[in-house]
Image 1 (cartoon, rainbow, N blue to C red):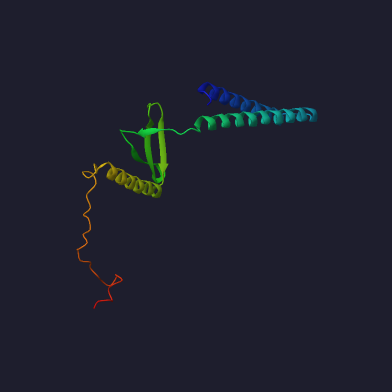
Image 2: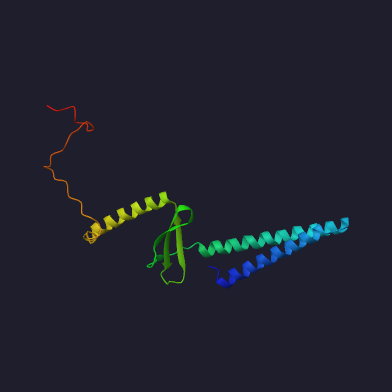
Length: 161
């Protein structure tokens, strides 16, 4: 995994190559003779190649640095809030508290995730002995002897004897 110093070095190399390429392009625009134009165009191609190589190296290092999963815990002060353009923002911190983690969802995605979270919490709670009953309302168990109602929208409505 690349270190912060390595990433900064690669970012600096990329920035310097980009500035050099911009200078070479400016020189190419001001070239007066065909010989100067040919020389500056060659320098621009070389500088653009250096920019591409530096960008590829930087992207590979960043990808490598971010490839591992980030484990986080919910932000205790504001774990969920609304965000720009109708998005829902989930906020967390890494276990060490050194890095913030943010996940943005659309309203539809947030609703689907919330539903799944509640379902997983209920299943986990059931396995742990029902500690969430104070938070989640209890649902009455269906009794086998309870009468079932039939109406115009039920399949048994037309089968009365």
